[in-house]
Figure 1 (cartoon, one colour):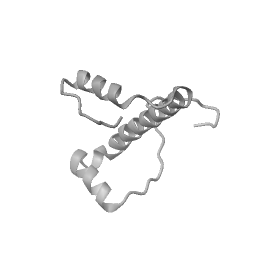
Figure 2 (cartoon, rainbow, N blue to C red):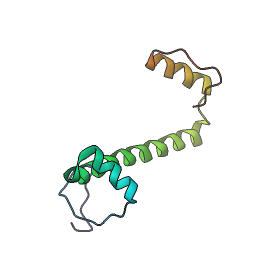
Figure 3 (spheres, rainbow, N blue to C red):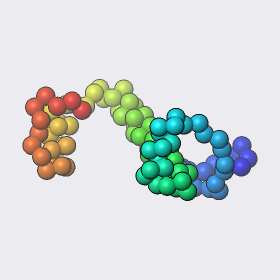
Figure 4 (cartoon, helix red, strand yellow):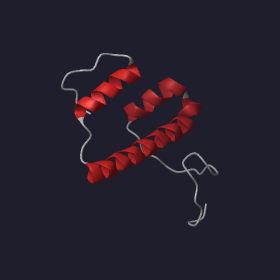
Amino acid sequence: MGDGDDFLPGDGPSSGISVSLTAGTLQAIRERVGRRGVSAYLERAAQRQIERDNLDELIADFEKAHGPADAEAVAAKRAKLTGSAPESGAAA
């Protein structure tokens, strides 16, 4: 891959790299997906982390422009989405 190539997470050709993991983390991954599923598992985990990082950036930008979200409103919307009762004093 060249430096000028632009790919979205999950797109483009595969590229081999070296990654260091603690023995316990690697063992837990292998127990879930087997020895041959480690790369695919790490790819999916990295994509989810990128999505979370992007969402954190969007939330930070929103809060910078509009202030923090109202905790009670967030709890009410969360309860509506999950079908559960809103928690009193729930943090966003």
